[in-house]
Image (cartoon, rainbow, N blue to C red):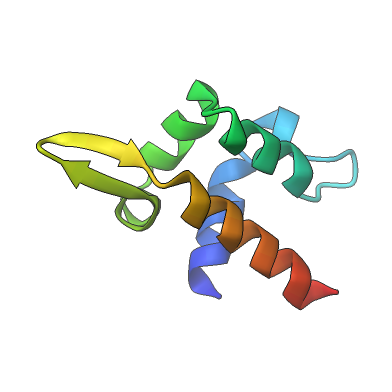
Amino acid sequence: MKLYEELEKQLKNEPNFVSDNGELKKWVVINKAQNFDGELIALLLDNSELKDKFFVDVKGTLVFNQNLFVQFLEQKNYLND
């Protein structure tokens, strides 16, 4: 789960995505992703591994693969339960 660990580390740079006990607020992140939040997208773009995974290059423009990102987080939630 190296990619998830990298994602979690990157997202924890934003205090609004972290609970008081230091856990990632996945439901907040998913909501932000569903609304194409600029702050979230900027965090993802700042990490080359995450950028390669969750963005598609279309004629020189990076497009956020929202469905893949949300599925990735939801799958991780399911595996933890």
